[in-house]
Picture 1: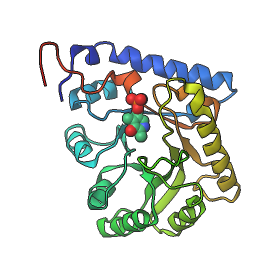
Picture 2: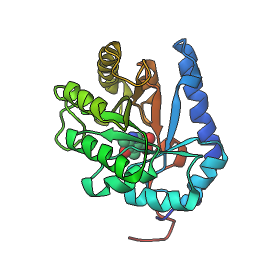
Picture 3: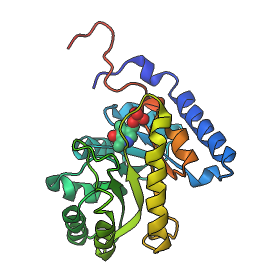
Length: 246
Ligand SMILES: *Cc1c(COP(=O)(O)O)cnc(C)c1O
């Protein structure tokens, strides 16, 4: 994982800046900034950089691959930070995920939900907070459950003894103009509101995990309670040190 000094320089300032913008944006909406969790997405960055973020007060880190996260969690420990899995979870990695992560945001199928529930039992984990990832764009390359299949998956997750359904997560297509992501954020909120009125979530409200470096302010305007911000905090991923090729 090559990393330039740039990633390390100013990390605290970038983290503070993101926090400040979240706070300003929340207040502008008449919302309490404390109800918004910043998940610092640390995928593809080395443990030393993550350590710096933790020391600067990052409480929640997001990783999208189990194997990569495992090495980091072994080195850095858990609690703090809380570790969120935000990437697609393959069946053969599910057992490790159950023992490693505090929250799994990317539950997207009935089979996966039932597997996680069984693995919690086998691993002696009493309760695993999960979110359902919804694919609102219908893109075949993306993971997530379709809107049509969402109600069925919600019921299935709720029927799982050891899973705690805390909310919904989405990853819209990437737009340079963040405003174009707004309809997706709005739609996720509508879906959340429908489900929360049926008391489908553990806490009555239901979390909304949406918004990344490019569009987290738009997501907060649409009700995000969890934003997943990587580049704006850690810098570009996988940048090579000057003079190094490949
Ligand atoms: C990488 C990633 C992010 C963070 O993306 P940035 O644009 O770097 O902020 C957020 N959510 C998911 C699911 C990701 O894979």
